[in-house]
Amino acid sequence: MLLSIESSCDDSSIAITEISSKKLIFHEKITQNEHSDFGGVIPELASRLHAKDLPNILSNCKEFIPKLKAIAVTSSPGLSITLLEGIMMAETLSAILDIPLIKINHLHAHIFSLFIEKEATLPSSALLISGGHTAIFEAFSHKDIRLIASSGDDSFGESFDKVAKMMDLAYPGGPIIEKLAQKGNEDKYNFSIPLLQKKDISFSYSGLKNATRLAIEKNPNDKENISASFQKIATAHLTRECKKYFQRNKVKNFMVVGGASANLYMRDKFIKLCDEFNIKIEFPKLEFCSDNGAMVGRLAVEFFKDIDE
Ligand code: KG4
Ligand code: ZN
Image (cartoon, protein in one colour):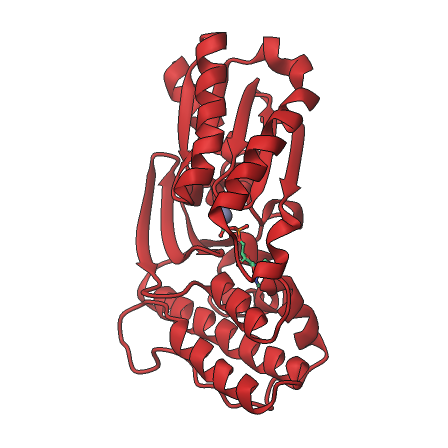
């Protein structure tokens, strides 16, 4: 078995994966609701909460410790002081048990969230939409994942968080905006799609965020219509850039991963787009969209096979 730890942001999570079957034996996650009133994650607070929560989760799976063959941990990217909490625990366990430590890239782990308890089906292209990133990757194997395009400023999820904060809503804003949008008129505000004139594939959310800010200042109580209009254009920007990518490349398999891949409005738009291009599209199970230890463990299983050979 392999124990994996995630602490790159505001989720403390530990998973235990059976290496040969890829079965998830144990998985627990504590999401830090303490940040909700601040409109974003406070790194020092997050770090202190990881220091409290990770040992509690570990004690819930201590019966499996004698069976462990490796420890895995998210080592980057993320908030340095929160990553450190997971890394310290992982290094300690690896040293005491005298088993290998596998350091995992958080973005690549999101791609492997699709393969939890399954065989990996690669190559595939992937759109990662989270609080920290908006990017297209091409994944050929666990060791060969290439960045194709990314955001030059805010990320998709972050723009939802910031728009929610402007409307005095809690953090994380993504699920709240999505829910408000269901009751709103998405054509009420005419925001423009970012980077319409650009030929290359890239993402940008700061302009849309500022346009939304102006609408909120003028109509502070029109939350449902503003949410719907913002979500429509934020999503249209994703599908427009991915459409360019599909037109220029032979894409057979596509996945949308990351915390914001839980957004059902966005899922529906991508299902339609991929249908147009005859591309197979997949999304992670809703429980594995946001940060979790299971995806870290799933990617680590692939690296463990390399050590073990
Ligand atoms: O992957 P994740 O848990 O953490 C990072 O690695 O950043 O993603 C969290 C982000 C937050 O910005 C959150 O607002 C966004 O994902 N998110 C959503 C939805 N659910 C979570 N954004 C839009 N719609 C959602 N339903
Ligand atoms: Zn993440």
